[in-house]
Length: 154
Length: 90
Image (cartoon, rainbow over all chains, first blue to last red; front, side, top):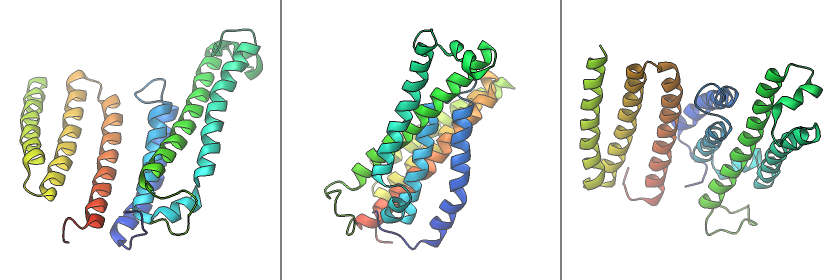
């Protein structure tokens, strides 16, 4: 299931579709606060792009682009962005995730700081969700094989 | 006009039930796959019709695009799985 296939149609389609999937995921993340979507949904769409890549180009090709170790690092970075913005608000004298207080360091009005803070949190959530979905998907796809023997993972 | 879209939506729901029958009792696995993917397409249309009826088409287009994308990826994964397990001779 995870071998590199030689289907020309599906490979070409994936290559065409991939940039649009990423652009759409970024759109969903950016417009999360005034349309359906947000960090979680955008992250899931990004992970769906990786699923398409695994199915069309094989497991090894995808692993070369993003290993499971890198996915773990990215998920940690996402959680760090979320927690960091929350803690920054705490340091600046507000409650946890009280974005209005960010106006002191962003040099904008509190309303704009609120919008930017939500955007930052959503970017963190999207990164964490994408990486964790990717790890779960890899764990399911390579079930029964030990993660160490990368060479003969089929 | 809303009445018309409402009736079209109800008709689509009836068609979804027919496809659900095919997906549940399909004699072969290919019938099930075709039924599932047809249900996905019909759900897409029902979502858009709901957007027209509630007058919020701009929001429902976002959702339906994601639904179409996931439906496509699910279809590809299912086809790949059937190809590898050799349940269907292609």
